[in-house]
Every structure is written in C-alpha cells, then in structure tokens.
Image: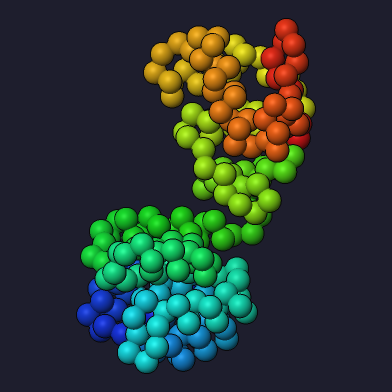
Length: 224
C-alpha cells in the first residue's frame, strides 16, 4: 500500500483529503507543522508528499527543500490557494513533481497523485537516444538534463526514431506514423519541414546532424 504524507494545517482540508485518498486505497499520515512534516518524511519516507505552501509555523518550500536534500527520490506535490506563476516556478525549481491550486477537482488530484507515484517507481523505462533521454510515461524529452519542448507531432516522430534506433526509417514509415496527428496525408516537402524542425530542437548542429542522419535514397538512420 502506498503511503501519503499530507502536510496541511486546515483540519477541514485534512479530513476531506484523507477521506478521498483512503477511499482510493492509500494510507494517509498527517502533519500540521513544518517540523513534524520534515521529521516524518525523513524518518519514514512516504510514497508521496502532498504539501501545502502556507503552514502556521513555516512554509512548504522549507519542507520541500529539507525532504529533497535528504530523500530526493520522494515525490512532492504542492497544494496551495495561490496559483501565481512565481509560486509555481519556485516549487518546480525546488524539485516538486507537480503543483495543484485550490480549489481542485478530486479526480484530477487523484490522477496526478497516481501519476507522480508511478513515475517515482524504480525501473521506469527511459529510452536513451544519443544525448537525449526520453521518458514515455511522462512524454518528456531531456538533453543534458534540460527539457526539450516538442510538439505532439515532433514527439511522435522522435519516438518512431527512438524505437528504431540503429535501423533505417523510411520517409513512408514516418508519413504513416504521423498521419493521424497531421490530419491529412503528408507531402514530401512538408515532411522535410518536420524533420528540419525536429533537428533544430535536438541536434547540436542541425545542418550537420549526428542523431537523425540522412541515408540518401532510403530515409534516415537514427544513432542510438
């Protein structure tokens, strides 16, 4: 059973969230203060921490920093009544996996909790493609630790290349894979534009690519 540490000092919210989470089969442990939250998270690491930003004796950012310093593998989701960009950026920069503004929809919170716990499980399959790492569960692509922002179509094309690393991928194969996203048959010139855009995001030198290499007359060979 997954255990969730709920760090919140509002008794009504604690009661509501505890009932919601226990109804989904989670074991919920509460902490109302900064000190208690840090002590419980470090002495008995939970599967996930649900953490309010504003606490009576401190703040959630300090709790998150203490947890991530000693137990970086423990996922943290911030809960707050504030949805401003500064708080969101601060939480993510401190290592939080997600950020949910109050009031939130119960099913959305449960989905995000389940996703964060699943992502934190050891052995999650990550695909390596040269200097790129691709996490299919999160649809997240990183290069040298920095996220690469791709469109849905670009991501789908990259996944096609990643799953065929070392093999030649023909232009017909690419067109077939992208057809649903594009909504229509992809012309030769359009496909070339898509390839160029993808290279512009993942290659050191798009003019001299080292990941998606052109094999003239055949298609592309992807370096794994």
